[in-house]
Image 1 (spheres, rainbow, N blue to C red):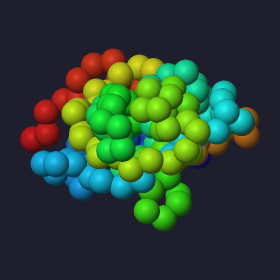
Image 2 (cartoon, rainbow, N blue to C red):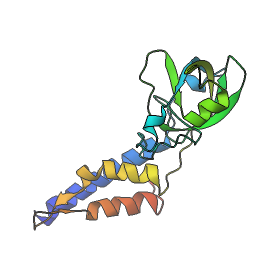
Image 3 (cartoon, rainbow, N blue to C red):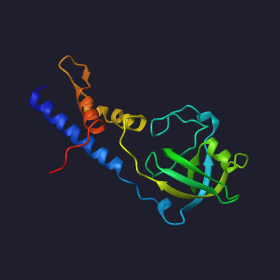
Image 4 (cartoon, rainbow, N blue to C red):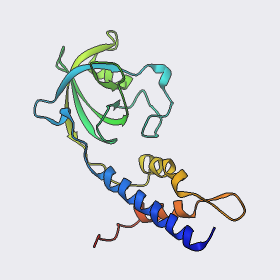
Length: 183
């Protein structure tokens, strides 16, 4: 592949990566961000899912205070209040879901235990978004985004194998030093 063509691919990949990084910094509007919060039904993850990967790339830990929400950014902190008993817990969003109509959040087993609805399986809750700022950092979420874009960034080398040089360049640009100002 000619060097000029490779250079264009690398620049295109870096532009796509920059856009992805900027979109990761933005907050996603949600009904849960309204004053009074979002009200609906919460359920919790079964023990059978313990250890499986979540949409954010981290493994589900049934003893951690985490949850799945359809739109809030990964890393968002949400106060969930059980409307039947008044108990509340703060969880971190690390997955997508729930995929059942009228449910607003899927909680970890630990969060459901704190809200005392394990036996019932579901309960009415109010969601209050506390923090949606997601910082770019080395770690599970950042590296998952990089791996997800690896297909766009890796390019065939002369020997036929794929090179990760563009991937390393993007990782260095986005997660080690601040991006240069846009002129």
